[in-house]
Length: 551
Image 1 (cartoon, rainbow, N blue to C red):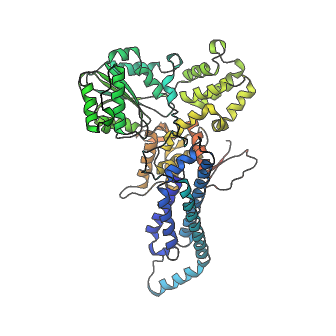
Image 2: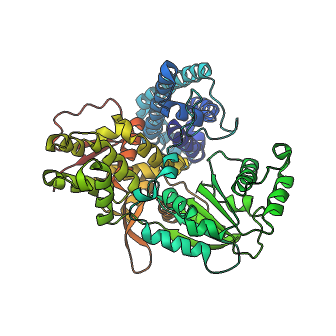
Image 3: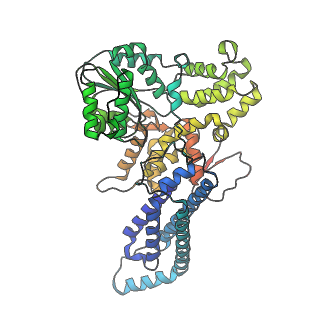
C-alpha cells in the first residue's frame, strides 16, 4: 500500500521537474535528493507491504514494519502537499522579456519570499525524515522486488502456507447449490463437439465459485470416463513453467497408475516439454489450470499441450476476461462468464449453511426478514453466503444476535475468523492491480453503498486527481476509459447500464468488495468516510473526506 503512495509521489516529482525546469531554483537539490531516496526505497516496498499486511507469525517485528510503512506514507503525503503549494505560489511563469520581465521577477520574488522560505524549510525537514526512514528500513532486511522467487502471497513470515482457495476443492456434491445449469453446459463442452483441442475458460470475480464449479465438472463421472488421463494444476501467482511441467507429468502418471519417469526433476525445460508431448501424443487428455492471472500464460504452456485431434480439452479459471481472450491466439476457446447466484439459489445456499442443524434446514419465521437482508448484502456471491451463513450458524438463533451481525458486518469482517478467507480472496484481485489502477479502484469506496456510479463522472474524477498519466498522442479521457475497461475485465467493477453505442454508462462494485476497499482506504489514509449521524469525527491524517447523508 505504501508502494502505491510512493509511486504516485514520484510521478508528481517527475512531472514537476519536467514542467517547471529552472523555476525550481533554491529547492531543486532537495526535490532531487528526495526523489533519489524514494526511488531506492521503492524497490523494497512490495516486500514491505506484504509483510505489513501479513497477520501470521510476525509478532513485534511485524508491528515495526507496519509503523515503518505508515511513516513512509505520511512523509509521502507531506511531499504531495509541498508540491501543491509550490505549484500554487511559486510555479507561475513570466512570459515577458527585457526590463519588464526583470521587474516582474523581482516583484514576484519579494511577494513570494515568505512562501519560499516555508517551502524550503519544509523540504529540508522532509529530506531529513526520508533519510531516517531509509536508515530504519535496513533493520527489516526488505527484499528488492526482483529478488527471490516472486510473490509471497499466501505465505506468512513464519513460513507456513495458507491458500484461501483450497477449501473450494473439497466441497461435497450435495453442498453445491445453483451450479446445475453451468455444470451441464461445461460437461457438454468437454465430452461433445470438435476433435480439436478446445480450451474452456470460466471467468468471474473472486468468490463466485469458479473453482468449485470447475472441480465438480472435472470430477464428473461422465467426464472421468471420457478422457484417458486428467490432471488438476493450481497456478500460483509465483509459478514457474518448469514447476508446472513437472507437476503435469507427475499428475498424469498418477491418474493412469504409471511410474514417474526417472530423472524428471533434473530435466531441462525443453526435455520436459518433449516428455509431456510424448506422453499425451496418443491420449485424449483433460488439463485443469485453476486461477490463472498472467495474460501470456497460454504462450508458456501451448507447446506442451499437443494437438492430437482426439477431442482433448483444457479448463482454465480466471478472474480476468483479457486472460480468457488471449488464449484465442493459441486454442479454440469457449468462454463461460459465471454469473452470481439467483436470489432463490442464494436463499437455498444460505439456509443450508446457517440452519443445517434444524429440521428441514428451515429459517425461523422471526429471523426471515433479517436473513433476507443479509443474503441481499452477499449479492449472489457463493463464498460470501457460505462464510457469513457459517458464522451465523455458530450464533444463538435470536433477533438480537442476528441484528448485531447484520448491522456490524464491516466490523465482523475485521475481527471474525470465519470471514478471514472471504477477505483474503476478495483482496487478491486488488493486490494484483498495477499501482495506477489501485488508486482508481480505491475511488469507488468514496461512493455510498449500492450507489450506481456514472462512468463519465468517476473517470473525470480520476483525471482531476492525477491518477491518469499523460501519454503521447492520446487524450486523457481515452486513457481513463482504458483504466475503467481493465477494472471491468478484471471482474472488479460491475456494469450496471450500457448505452446505445455499447459504452458503459453506469457501474458499481459488489458490496463486500466495497468493504475490502474501505479497509484499504483507511489503512492508506486515502479517504475518511463521514455519515450524517456520526456524533464525533476524529481524524489525524487523511487525503480526502466523503460525507454521506440520507436522501
